[in-house]
Length: 176
Image (cartoon, rainbow, N blue to C red):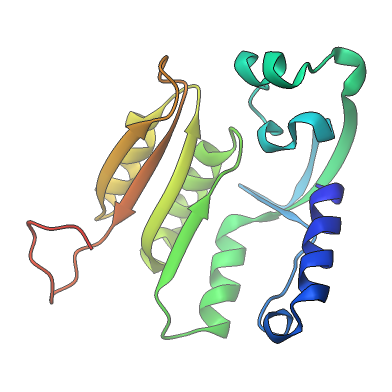
């Protein structure tokens, strides 16, 4: 989101020792290259994406239809991003932190479909609405991950999935 990038640029300019280690890509990650149009409001920027803004957030921050404006976000294929990261860091363990406001299902499907999921050592994924946590955990488990799920909303509409692979040096009975 353009406004989020403004904050990121400002943070990097204030942290010169870290800014040389960070590359901002002004595109979103998706299941393919392209564009995504979403309704955006800075009042609920934490909940903008494919999923609707959760009713509890709409009520909490008093989001009205007139607050929403359409934003076009350029997208890059998630598998391509992962290949680029691996090329830059051939021996690094890769952590996938995925909070894609509803696009997490398509992104995980793309990583599994291309085999790029095999590059990931651990994952922290927020899921939204349907198809839900079971869909993502089944994809991760089929790709060799152990998983743990925690609902963040009482109705089970949003939650977190942790995924990790057991290394040869770890006991299978404990988490990393």
